[in-house]
Image 1 (cartoon, helix red, strand yellow):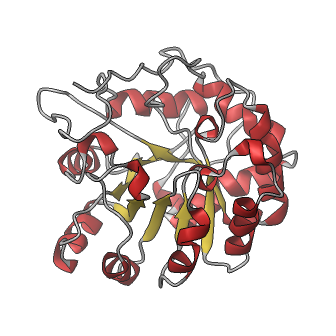
Image 2: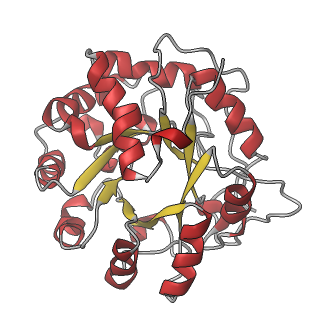
Amino acid sequence: MPPLTPPPDPDPRKPRLTCPPGSVDCQVHLFGPAARFPFDPGSKYISEDALPETNIALQDVLGLSCSVVVSGGGYGMDTSHLEDTLQRFPDRFRGVALLRPETTQTEMARLHGLGVRGLRFVSPHHGAHLPHLSERSAAMAADLGWVVQFYPSPTDLEEFASRLMALPGPVVLDHFGAVPAAGGVDQPAFRTMLRMLDSGRVWVRLSGPMRCTKEDFPYPSVAPMARALIAHAPERLIWGSDWPHVNMQGRLMPNDGDLLDLLLEWASEEAVRNRILSDNAQRLYDIPAAAAPRPST
């Protein structure tokens, strides 16, 4: 049986940062109830329940209006859990799906009606039970106005850069492009990421700093990368908590209020933070401002 991933901190702190109206957490994973939604046999982990209701409570503590549910690798390419969440909480979630290679345009259009606004591919290093880059699927996604999210491994962003740049729609690089923070901002992979941003079609998600380093919070080696990205292209950056932070065995679990407050260290200007948290995210995931009121806290 795969390992049980540690749970998130159950007591998120109210952040010092005040989020602007319509702020969006651009990556969370949700799981459970386990009796209804079993994990994929190929999953590298299993998780205790991380329910939509719990995430909505977290949104309220952090001052967010909406989360983008990225269908967890724990469910492989089964979208049942994602669909259930979007049907029950259409005002608090958008979706990004892990789809089978044979998925049709008709099926993608049905998912669009539920609130899916993107599909995710991963490097083969992340597992055979997850979808790998498909130009066919990406073209159908572009027809619907979806984003393509890609999670590289720490060693292959440069290998995939040309294929990603050739796709017809917007591309989001997950978790700082998985660039190893120890290599700094002058390493070839980071320079490749900046070059991709310069195309105007590629976005980077400031999320999962613990995926780029073995350090514990506040992940100091990630800060130079975050600041460099913000200085370079703040109009094409989004933020995500990566809640509930799977696969953190043997590591310090961060508090989600503290994770959001890292933006205060990375981006000194409030207008830039507001753009990353609200304007960019709403535009990228087709979240009308009127449909994303800031919750009362």
